[in-house]
Length: 176
Image (cartoon, rainbow, N blue to C red; front, side, top):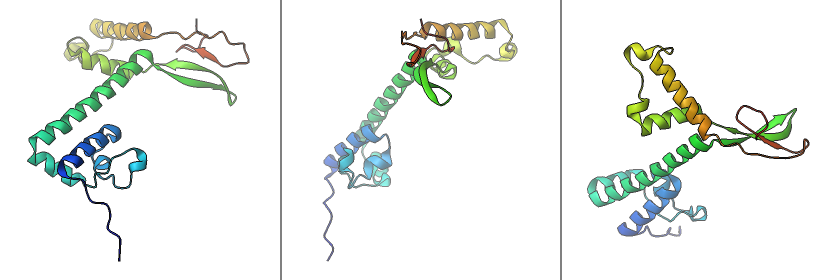
């Protein structure tokens, strides 16, 4: 005779466990279907995505709690994107298959996206006659974005001997 599995948690317990798991997994399905995943630091919920969706429809309180967790997740994602847009990230530099240094890389696309999201009145898409990339307003926007990238770039100085890895700036020259 098969041994019965662990009992599913009570409603309040599984909701709390689900929300804690959602904060860690960023996935409704993974947060709900966690039986046996305690080793990953997830609390047992033993529910399906469908059960979670039904519960959200029945309980406005649970639905609000789920939405609050999603807001926290998006806030965290936005903060990470903003940090990468401003500070960039380090990438290794190889020469003939050997690590010779690193460089700070920036994403112009991410910077533009963040500017448009945070200041849409100033960095909105250009329409009509300003669609021409050579128009004065398009050139002004391009200059503002370029200046934002340059002023946000922080050089990381490294006085390493020639045989050791060096940190270089975004254009590939030695950092100063």
